[in-house]
Image (cartoon, helix red, strand yellow):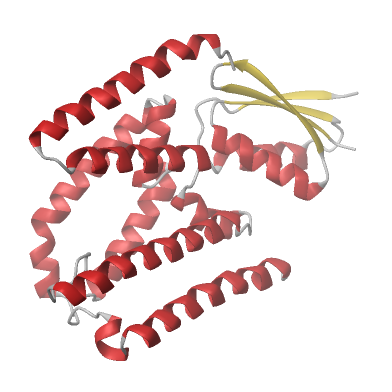
Length: 74
Length: 203
């Protein structure tokens, strides 16, 4: 399973979702993308987009206000 | 989220809120009500994540109308609320509360400038306050921009009002009557709301 990490700490919407989409579009061979964000709005945007695309995702609270979203492409 | 670390801050915040409310009560009796209303609206804004800049940028970038529909609902609710206030005050003394200003070319120019600014900054004014309270240091910079811009805008507004084409203030109930203007506004807002579903389907 190919993994990739994406660090969008400090970025506000719409940049995190745009970058997530960009990475997933560019690196077609990866199965798992881990996105790290500190914006709850960006996290919500990424969930909604994953739901509309049918990707599975998990969320992890790293610290107060930092979320790690694991997107599984299936 | 670590709940134990938050109990102390919650107690502290509640103490500060009630302290300010008590102080305000001795100053003027209806101030605590406004203060609590303000806190409640801020809390709702923060928890719901309403963001007007996303409402518009998502349409263009992602073809996503979710937040746009949310702001339409917000517009409808505030319209109905203000309508009740205006209706009752109109009966009692004749002057209409609320911001009713002349519209004109300057409104459009200002709207486009503000729109570009809020999308570049990543938040509108209420979004800035939300993100500021979440701990984004960047938004202190954005907030100072908002304050400077508003001051300059207020200072320079008369020039725009005179130099650019502006029409007299429009207050719909004076033209169509309360019932028709009420129906017209609700129909337009609900129509735009429904229209977004059609636009979304036509990807």
